[in-house]
Length: 100
Image 1 (spheres, one colour):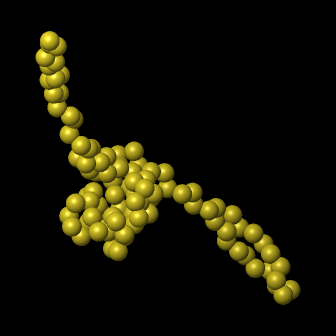
Image 2 (tube, rainbow, N blue to C red):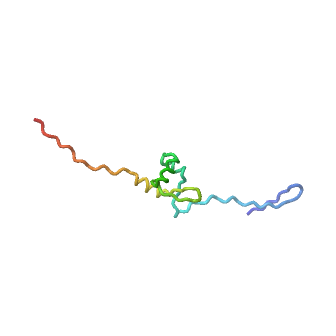
Image 3 (cartoon, helix red, strand yellow):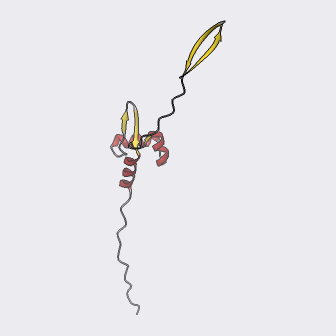
């Protein structure tokens, strides 16, 4: 803490000023979280679509903090993988009949 002596209206006053607290560093053990706007931008869909998916129970899992939704990147990645079309099955090549 720094203490400054300033003159105001002819009287000296002590003013305590603290150094600004730095922003917290994300904890390495916690997964990064996206808010609904970040998820919307990442997926390229409107926010309303994500709310619709959630109401139908088909969207990615989320955490609720009061009225705020947060999505863990690991959950989003898992959900995205579940949306992938199945791999096409190998069909045998058509056989050609000999020409006469």
